[in-house]
Length: 413
Image 1 (cartoon, one colour):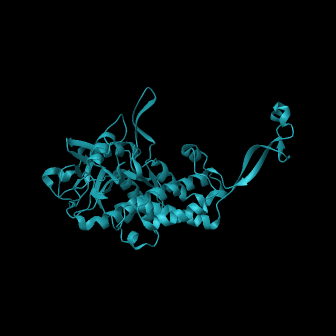
Image 2 (cartoon, rainbow, N blue to C red):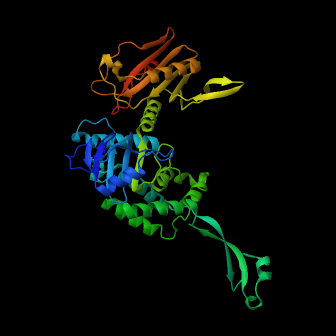
Image 3 (cartoon, rainbow, N blue to C red):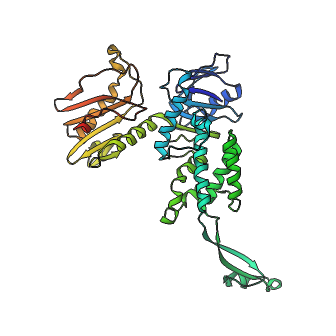
């Protein structure tokens, strides 16, 4: 297990290990160079900086190579190895918010101390939910079975019976229903349990997975994960299954809207950091905003322009807030600002152009908008907002990652 942070470098040369530079085996290096770079539109995990060095991109989580090397990638907002536990806690909180998970994960001291990679936390969360489901009793469903039996039960299949050979006339071709645990939801849960049992590196997760494998012994593993996910029931009788589905899907496919899919094997799980931060800011705002505020994520009602009645270039701000006729726009950027005025505090001119366009379309050129960045020790002190026009203001605010809040002025009013 190697622990680094976003944009760290991986090399096959001998190097003093740190969160920004790590030595990996040649087999892992070759696999990442082959499968982790740009390939016909697939997400890129690394870029080649030289024949012996790779640089990670802005994804966090864990990636496991076929040779067994696990690389844990933490958020870049940590200063030294002493901050690894804090960065893991932050990553866990962000992923929990994105997946709507209960923050409590098991009772193991190692998990509470945040000295396990994210994949093991999520595996522990899934196993805890699966155990709770097993104690309450998994749901069963009727399943139709076609059989050839020496006695009649269910419904006789006349077409098959008439086509039967004369020597088998004493056998009945029947169709009957059985009340069984063999249903898509249970098959996927069993598959996720076996996935953890085969790949987990912690004794607690492995032991609980083996126990659950016994409890779900009557349920076969899924033969077609995509098809079973498609037929996952959503009626009220399956309300107990709602919380476990995101974890099950993530463990088996890595194909949630904010997860990175690719040719990554084993206990791999990667997330684009910008999307996690956006969801973290969104969830935090929903926690503190009064009930009469409406909060809309990725609102895409407006377009930049139109031609001959056809709209072009959909505009989707991260968060649109409403209270009656008033509106505010919030955009979250996972970027570290500096206190260097000569470098414009590392603010992006393109971000300002984007917010200006949002202000014209969504606010009619009048109102207040917010650019939210993670708070750091040298975050620039800005006493006044930026004036994009006489009536359009842009606030640049720090977001406290631990307290999960930013000083939004519209909430104070």
